[in-house]
Image (cartoon, rainbow, N blue to C red):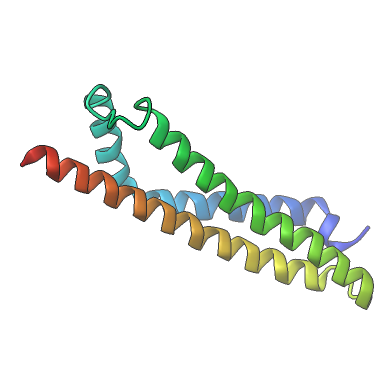
Length: 128
């Protein structure tokens, strides 16, 4: 049983991931609550002619999901393949998994910032 398949390692990775998600949510808590109230209060007014009011939310969900899944899957397959080729069982996989996780965090923050900026611009237009 290798280090990367031990229950303690899996528990540690899951715990660290939950910690990082909670940390990111604390950073964006204020903006997220403003966004939530803005969406709830303006569901009917948010239809810009491009589709239903929930279309933007589904787009953000899809973009965030892609930023989570793609780097981690690439790290999994490439890391396992390189480890098998070079005989370094968990080392390359763990390094690429860490890089994939950081890359995912960067992408998620970028998508959220972009979307929050769009919401703020839309809010300013409605106020004027």
